[in-house]
Image (cartoon, rainbow, N blue to C red):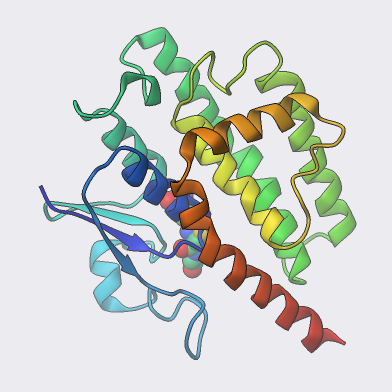
Length: 227
Ligand SMILES: N[C@@H](CCC(=O)N[C@@H](CS)C(=O)NCC(=O)O)C(=O)O
């Protein structure tokens, strides 16, 4: 089976897929599209050639034997169903699986919306100012602390799943911009974060190292240009 991850680890869902493949020892190639390199942002994915793989012209695209999966959650679910992947990632038990799917359904419209909204505001984009974006982001972190992690050590129960992986890769985006994880007042989130990262090592650090440097540089450049 041939697997190619088309993406760039500066993108949260790309990191999530890359880490999953590495942690599970699944052979793959990374087609590093370097979406912020070159004359225009996203130039490498806003091409007709890329659109043939992913008509939305977004990353990631997971190519499996010539089939293209263009949504990261669908790609994680597909990989999680493989026989050589431990059951805890995406449990076969329907009730356990429903909990994972519930988080994954919540993630784009709530978690990612506010994490991404905060990043956009840091770069002067989006429709809200930085302080409103930060409040929305903090309210979302409170939901993680008081709802998702209220009774369980992981987002979908007692075991590490693709829900935790997807969430932690989104939170790390803010750390790269010097905004930290804001876990001081959120002890459950703090413990969860350390546990999830520890379970993903050494791949979490490996995938995040270059991303952290590149993201930090972009933010510094943006701030200097504004002065
Ligand atoms: N729902 C998609 C979101 C993908 C996405 O938003 N990717 C961003 C990078 S993090 C992108 O490719 N943006 C380029 C654009 O929107 O033009 C997924 O999870 O796969």
